[in-house]
Length: 101
Image 1 (cartoon, rainbow, N blue to C red):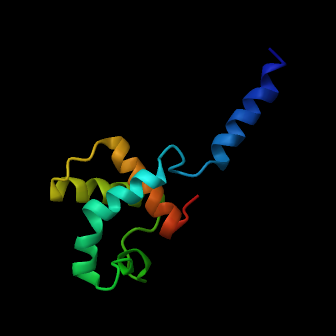
Image 2: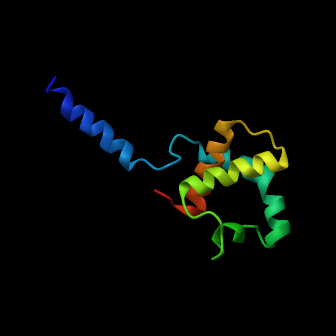
């Protein structure tokens, strides 16, 4: 039993250091973003639409809020993303813009 303690501590510390969307595929998320999100963001914010993520008064201020916003957009727009698609999208947005840990 004592020999399991170091392994347990390593496992737990690895989870603490992991990012909030590490199980998502950012490459797939980027494709989804380009297909389903970018046009709306460009229409609302101009340019390439990225100002929605970088503006001072943005709504998303933590990883949980990012996940909730993606789910809300999915529901409002009827994009029919599966939970794993939302995770991929969050992985892309977090890596590209937010950098939440």
